[in-house]
Length: 339
Ligand code: DP6
Image (cartoon, rainbow, N blue to C red; front, side, top):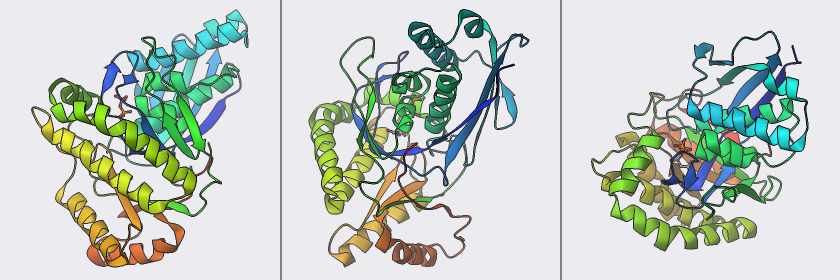
């Protein structure tokens, strides 16, 4: 048996959302997206892999449960890494033919809109890359597992370029700035619910692509300008601009969910209460000091600067008195760190 390789990969939370695929099988998005990668101390996936001539088949355990290795997404990631290893001649053919065992776990709720698949596939692909000694960029292979996973391959702020090529070879993630660029930046994850979402991201984006006119408007008229503007705001450390774009983009994404037919919604009354609180807080401050963003679930991610954290936590705890910092606020202030 080969030595066991263990890798940890962080969650990323998008500020310009990926929603809709140009190619379902290759997981090529309709639009560019931008995210921040969170510190692995707060939310991460951990994956161990090993190969052996004695293993009879590829096997995987997820959060302690044995799962099928036949999923096309898993197969595509494994095939992608192996063909890269063959091209780079990084290991010999015998090693490539041995079967693999994978064991992966998350330290946060799975499939509750907390980017678990992003961390999970980024982790799997990074572990496989290490096992097969692949040296080149693996974001396009992580993308084959789950689109947003390609952004978790890098730390700091990351831009996933939709690309234009039919084979998706230019649909890759690049780093905008590393985590040291904006050291005051923090993310607070407010866990509203850890139940599985009713409409998966994969299914939701398919319905939206087929039925939402707002989605067409968003990808052509909004995302290109927002992407450029938010990349600039990140480089300039302009929090007010960053916050405004982040909140508008989250709201537009959830508006698309309602504009889809049949419609679906991820935000709950508690999510709306958080949105309301953020706008009132920013109004009192006279400028945006906190930004919310919601993925395909009810949990909020608040972006804010370090100085604001104690004040915002205080208000949140008074708004939601039954919650405790441990139960409601899952992630404590997270620095945006590199992988
Ligand atoms: C709302 O990456 O989970 O979180 O590519 O089908 O696996 P698949 O979808 P996934 O979608 C994430 C959608 C989102 C927005 C984002 O992270 O950009």
